[in-house]
Image (cartoon, rainbow, N blue to C red; front, side, top):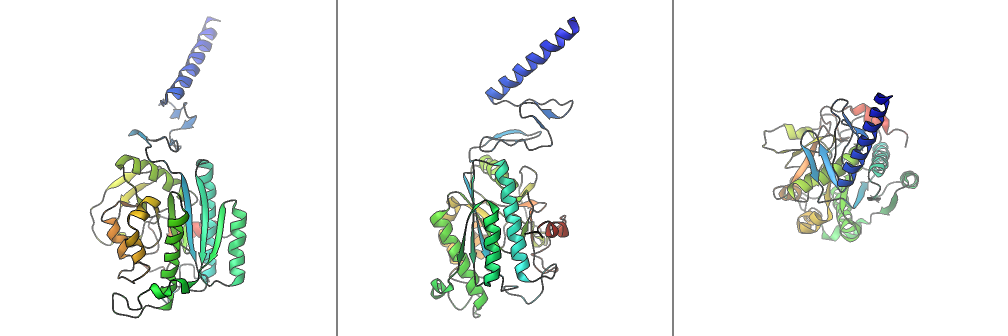
Amino acid sequence: MKKQNSIVKKNIFKKIFIKLCRILGFEIIDQSNFYVPTQEKLLNENLHVQGKKSIVLPLGETNISRPVAAFTVIYRSCTKINMLTQSKTRLFDKPKYEYTFRSLNSIISSIAHAKNKFPRIEFDIIVIDHDSEKNHLDQIKNQLDKSGVKNSLISLNVNEFKDNIKKINSENKKVTENQISNMSNIHKSLLLAKQHCKDLIYFVEDDYLHQKEAFTEMIYAYERISSQINKELILCPVDYPYLYSKIDNTNIFLGSQRHWRVVSETLCTFLTSKNILLKYWDKFSSMCHFEHYPFEQPLHDIYKLEFCLAPIPSLALHCTNINSAYGLSPNMDWKKIWDENENY
């Protein structure tokens, strides 16, 4: 009987101690069973508390000084044009609209996953479409309506921007009509972000398939790393193969479930904050007026001044040609992510 009373008293004291630790903001770990009683989680689960602290063992706790308030996806779609500058076929060899629909489906799934983790963050999707067929626009609208996320679908008017685009590019060649529509869509994206977005903005093209946890990891990483270095960031969700074709010095940061490394180049799919957008507005908008070589050169110039990070392994797949150095990310199940987004 005495032994039973001893166990009861021990359990009562343990519960009181755990409650006290929670009140004081401390975490305790039972290393015998890899359990964190203050969060009621196992050590291999995510121990990040959104907007407050990030915990990565054995490095301990990072206080979040840069919480994320809002997350806007600006999605540039066009189901008519297969490849912007190439005549090659894409990975999986499907019509362009199939990539658009699956890409949008992957974004909606990733937002749904993130909303469960971040109930205080505002999420929304803006689709800017150029010249897709009506039945394709209906499909996009149907996916948006079923998403449960605040959304809007905008049809691009290229004539709004055409006269502001120089017709000869940096290689002294005529700018193609496809590139003019692409530059116009980017311009519209930037203007909408500047006018309406509140915090983080994810600019993305319609041939990227995202893992379900992509946005969750990006938000966790943004809060943690930005708080660590006291700077705003640019995040690219793709571990592009071309980044391994040369030897570059880099820095490695820890996110939640990924390592993040500093990169000096990306394509035109990336996440950043409104603060960064406003700070380098002239650089960003220069892509909309003049075709540089490479096209993303203004972005690369920004990355010389700010941290741009990419995940290892990748959080998204760029569905370009299978032989392209801008396509298949290493150590990723490409077919799995394609099949997961079939039912849109």
